[in-house]
Image (cartoon, rainbow, N blue to C red):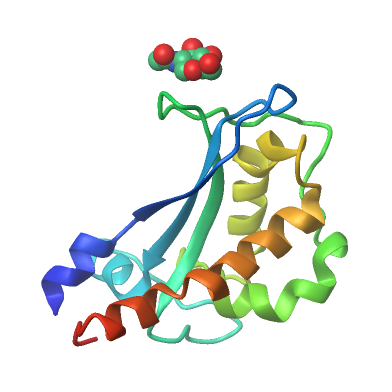
Amino acid sequence: MKSIYFILVNLFITLCILSSQVQSFDFFYFVQQWLPALCDKKAACCYPTTGKPALDFGIHGLWPVYNNHTFPSNCNGNSPFDENQILDLMSDMQKDWPTLACPKNNGKKFWAHEWNKHGTCSLSMLDMHSYFQVTLALKVKVNLLQVLKNAGTNI
Ligand SMILES: *[C@@H]1O[C@H](CO)[C@@H](O)[C@H](O)[C@H]1NC(C)=O
């Protein structure tokens, strides 16, 4: 079981190819992380103040990527993370997009980082609320844990 933790850390899933002139990127990486492995690997691992996450993958982020597999980052400094725009998503964020960073915190720093670094580069397609909403919906749709269980993986 240990080995699968490592294999699946930072598993990159290429979801959809989006090619169009208006977009400033080519496709997304939907990045999930196997939470127990993160805690094995990191010297310091802290559960969020909102509670210990379930034994499951957690969202790392939705990253716009170029076809050459490099990615743009920090695309719009005028659009800072604003938790007030995603209050309706907060309970799903806490459940499916938890941070394990220390010192323990409620996750907003992690979400702000993902938004500023990656989310702002998909603004041609997704505003802030849509960015988080779409990413949460992908987690449910992909359900990596169920895929692995169906394939006979003993998790
Ligand atoms: C990758 O593609 C992007 C967009 O076309 C380009 O701006 C960037 O310079 C490329 N990077 C490399 C290493 O080829």
